[in-house]
Length: 243
Image (tube, rainbow, N blue to C red):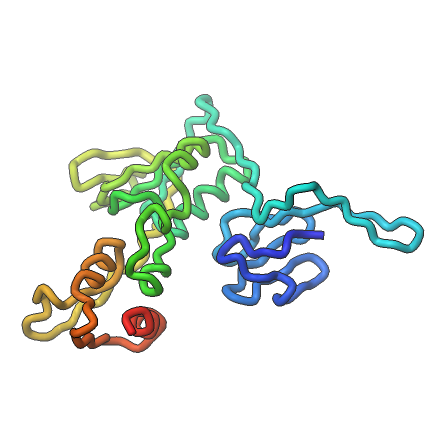
């Protein structure tokens, strides 16, 4: 017996696909283990609650608490100062924070360094094309307090310029260097800009960060015309949001 809400966007799991061991969300394919509640695949970070079930006199009885939480924070190992291993993660998006949390969930007690080019902790980037008015506090996947409690060292506004695999070192734009034992590159991508004359005019935008969304919202008025170059998911969602 489990909770019914996906921990990603609260989709009803009873409308998803259930096997003997897992349930898959009908919206974005987040997959949860029916015994542990842990998200084992897809975009969910938190686990779904699971409840004890027994059979008595031919009846299935589930033991439920008075208050039913929608999500459960998975247990994580704590940092052990005696463990000198360093796991570096270049990037601070959804993939990066999922990797960092997975390390802690699976018992890693060494140091975790997460380098982010932007000033903000990991946030839900796909929301930007759906809601140009979304503020960063509503977008955050994890807060700075959570990162501190999980012993994940987040280095914000830290642009990595070099990864030396032989020396196992990382160099930042400001000249600082860090040693590592293992490294994960999870930097994501950059928007493709137009290869045309005047592509850098003030009213031509790309969408990647909350600041980009804020600039687009500033120019988007009822009496203006908008041209969206690109008709994949981001382009279509942006057009729908501006309509």
